[in-house]
Length: 594
Image 1 (spheres, rainbow, N blue to C red):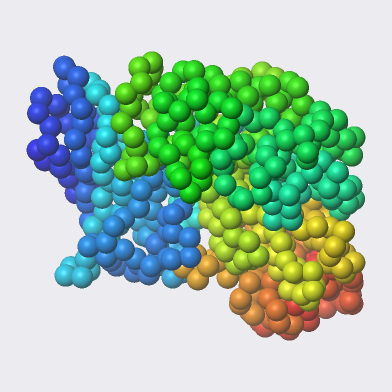
Image 2 (image 1 turned 90 degrees about the vertical axis):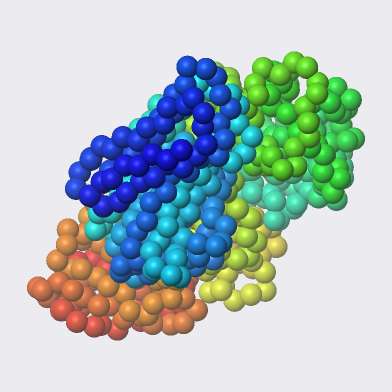
């Protein structure tokens, strides 16, 4: 069966084998070069959908790069014989952008069904030099239905690629099914994390010692990671599931949480949502209600289609808030619910859902609703790659996935997050560095994640005083200019080159951070009166390319990576190139019209 629809830019074709099902495509022109395509399936009788695709092509005219949330560092095109990308509630998001090397959009498309699995691609043909675009549905086992409706947003406007992606984010956010969760202010504040600094060797006393130092440096919350529930240090999950404290590390969790609160910090605790370990006390209770077992982990993935499984998980979270006074949860491994190729056959009666995505949605929806009844400003952190629009309903903190000591990867992942997460707090992966490395090198860990919420994970009593001065400086800078960094008009240049230069503007302030380019553009004729120029490189010196027509008198203050002011001068910035003596990992503050 094939259905076609033609707009002024594309011809869309639906391909699939359905008997007794009415399939239709409708087009709505939102504005010039912005279309909304609606797919509808209807049947008088219930049917189990078989694979279906929406296909169209885009000439490869003035297209040099592409972007999707799942690319990470591999930003290359897909050829039409390669596998595309997969998204669902717990993996990425169904959106792709093609743009030129100047960052101008040529085609951005997004799909409204972010809950169920969607395979998508825009793949280049060797024979025709066209990109063949496809949205594939129902490629995994689907539940019976009588109707299905979803929309495809197709944007060919000549705009900066990031504006088109922000339009996709706004489109998703306006849908009732994806209304974003409330984001408390603390979710945007710097935090201390125990993972890289302590791993599973956490204890209440060690955490309290680190938090005393962390609070002095400007951190407002602590995330206590894996290890609190077990004496095991093997990095497995065989002891997950009971979610009771191990007395040898946390003899009185309520006392410990109170001690953190007395420091003026919030307390967030790690839980692995799906795992139930083979050594847990509840193993026998739930061992027949699992999706799969992983011997390497020593744990199984619980099946959320059973109401008693969901109730058990939610009850554990509620008890932790009531009894210990938690302020938030780091909910991990949600993506492991979605591995249909590894799924065991379900033979135990009692399920109230057949669809795993729908059951996970019910689990998380009920979890957040009930937790907010106990504490309205509850914080919930999710990790890449489950950072799509469906997850914004439940989580208010999205963290870059693990990239220890890799400042470049952290930059790429946090900017990728920012392009789609709207007002959800985008967090960096926990930053760490070697205590003996040069302070300018350690500072790059902070500078590379300036446009996200910092999480710090070093032993603060073991790093040199110079490193602490650096950390205090950049955390202070982040807190003072948080609105500019997190809520300004973000303009990340050249994703295909891993964002070598990132700019943000808010009100009369602007910031440019260069990670590779030595030449930094500055428009002095704009409304911004204060500019911060950050040298995110391991080399001294930058050049400003001033584009304003009217010479502007400015006051320039140069500081090193620890915030120590090196010199201040008043100069006239005329149109052209000007040397700026910012040291490696340093900062220039430029006040215009002095």
